Image (cartoon, rainbow, N blue to C red; front, side):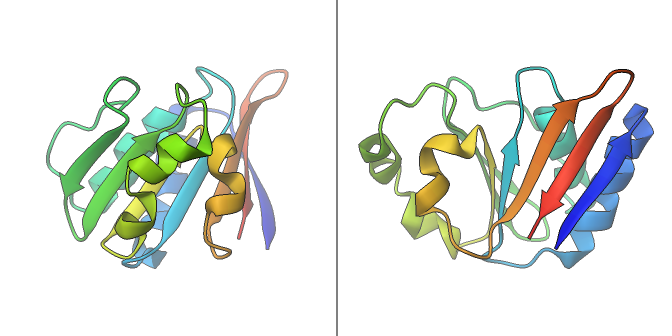
Length: 136
């Protein structure tokens, strides 16, 4: 399925997170694509909120992974600074997939390592709004 959603205001992004959250199950992977500042972390914060996370959700840019407790364990990765697939394997990525919900920002380096059922969301800027293309 390939769905495009226009995100004209922050509430549209929040509603997208609210709509996706109930369908997620343990073992699901959500890969968030898009350039810097397009809203990947904002989306993740709200997705986690709708998955009953009460902790502060922040970008794992420097620590590479944050773990949260909610309806399921949530593993939030940011691969922006990684240079090789070997670094991904050192993180124990495969061991984590089945333990909870995995959310990955900047997943390009891991594209061919992700499960086939990965939910891919491509955020982009348009002229006067943002959009999200959901591929699953």
